Every structure is written in C-alpha cells, then in structure tokens.
Length: 190
Image (cartoon, rainbow, N blue to C red; front, top):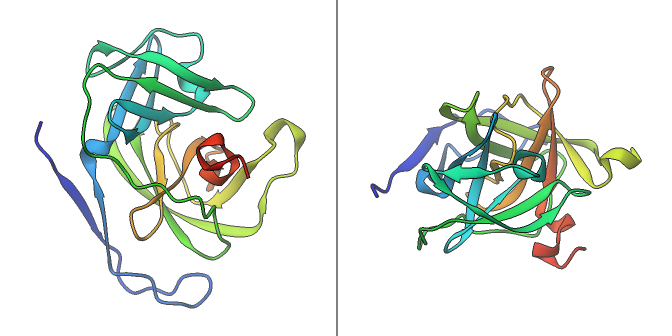
C-alpha cells in the first residue's frame, strides 16, 4: 500500500482567539478509510492495527466493507454514535489520539470521503458553549464549519494531527456535530 501524506498550507490567518495558527499541518492519508455499508457510505479512521473507529450510524445493522473486504463490528455504542470495526488487513499506521476534547477558539480538521467518493479536508473551529445540552444529542460537540455526506465517522484532528474526535453529522449550514474522544470509553469515558 502506498503511504501518502496530505499537507495543507493554511496561511497565518488569525484563529478566533487572535492567535496565529500553524501554516502547515499533516495527516497520513492511509489512516482514513472509506466504509461502504449497503446503501450508505461513510468514513473511518485507523486507531490501532486492524481497528477502525467510525460513527455507529454508518455501520449499525448493515453489512460493511473497506476496500471491498467485509469488516466485523467489534464495538457499538448507538447512544454515543461510536463504533469500531475490525478489518482483515492490519496496518502499522494510525492517527495518534488525544483525550483533550474540543476547545473553544481552536482550529480542527475533518477528513472524510465527501459524497462517498472524494477524500476531502474541511477546517472546523471550536465554538462558544461547545457542548450541546439536548438529551437526544447528549455529549456531542458543535464545531463551526461545513462537512459533507459521506464524512460521517471520519476523523477530526487538531493542528498537531492528533485524533480529537469523529464527525457525527452536519446541518448543511456550517455547523458540524462531533463526538470528542474524551466522551468515549477510548478515553476512560470522562
């Protein structure tokens, strides 16, 4: 498998906190997976060997594949919209996780297969009142920025390229609902 890196030149535009953001950020593309589940296509991220983290609504109750090879559902938490699937092929590459959670004013990057086809990166920002209190959306965080269908389950990384969360949903008007890893069992369910 060819290993590739994506580097984004972002310029030195001020972040909402008026702090300069890095002009370069890296993520290894082989860590982001396209997950095909019957009529649904989503994204996922390698977290260890042959384990891929994704959104539960992408894989729940469906037969899924990565690279046309069936995957096995090994963890599912529908209430938190988190799932882990096992692939047939192990990999030594992964996105390093962080349990810091989303921070108001910081920049993040959502990576996924927009409309199930094209791998894209979208810039997101932490917003004030970042955690949503609606019981139906319990524990999700709101980030400012646009994501597309097919990016659900894809990684959200910080400026250091560390995995902070995954995409849960977008509303089409510039707000993204996301699951921070610090709200999952991956980080001790804090």
